[in-house]
Amino acid sequence: MSITRKISQLKVKSHNITRPKFPAIDFHTHFGKLLGAMAGTENYFDLYETKDTIAEIKSYGIEKVVNVDGGFGDEYLRMMDKLKDAGDFIINFGQVDIMEFESPEFEAKVNKVMGEHHKNGIKGLKFWKNIGLVLKDSNGNYLRPDDERLKCIWSAAAEYDMPVLFHIADMNAFFTSANEENELIETFRDHPEWLFNKPGMYSFDELMEMQERLLEENPKTKFVIAHVGSYAENLGQVGRWLDKYPNMYVDIADRLSELGRQPYTAREFFTEYADRIVFGTDLLPMDVERYPIYFRFLETYDEYFSYRTDKGVPLGDWNIYGIGLDDTTLQKVYRDNAKKLLKIG
Ligand SMILES: [Zn+2]
Image (cartoon, rainbow, N blue to C red; front, side, top):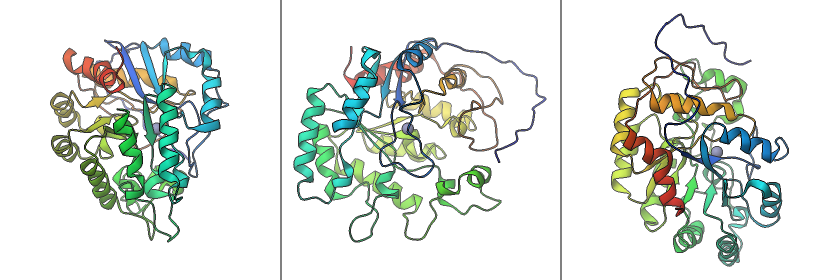
């Protein structure tokens, strides 16, 4: 059962923005499988044709994309073969074999893979919530994002000046009870496996403390904390982190539902932290139609419109408002900040 949306009878100005006002780099796209897959996640690898997908993305005025599914080893080779006709349109982020984190050779293996990534032109690393919410060590404890054993990865990333895109937590509602008061209850009726308020799991606040420690203890590593620093519902808090940790950046992927229901706060946040926010959509090759919604949110003052495509994940049952950003902010968010992080001209 999915959310049945009520039809709004509101008649207000509406803009159909099919291309961004300035060239854009999508910093968060998926062209392969989600590593360390969790229930309900998919392998997108076989579901698209590279050339067609790239043509479709370009038709929306996107200049380049960052594919976060570069992987490592054989997975990397398979991915690169699939993307061989992409030219420099696709920038790849890689991973390391996180499953090996308890092996005494882990650090040596990390250093070897990182050397290969550097040689292969990999521009950054991607990690996600299997660290914190899925993987356990041999004592039965969930692997913490700030675990000492992972420090060798962050050090190597700093050494090669590769940004680390890290998806640490989901919305707060994923960590609370799935009762009628939960604002995402319709989502959890369809996907009970997405709930994390289970015995033994870290709470949202605990994960945020770990996220902060990760930033604090690895000041030379640039972290792009995905989904508006894991906390789009509390931009005041994300702002305080950005003030405190100069190595922190955020993407806005898949959080229009949150950003667009607080347009005044979001506009202030984008303006104040314009140098630290990158445009990203969490794009899946089968759902390229999401771009115009992002452009409309960022560029217009349109009111009360849907934040998702038919294929997008239904989150809260509400609509969003545009934040009409100025040109300087738009240019930084759409492209300039990404270029600096990726060190491309
Ligand atoms: Zn993603």
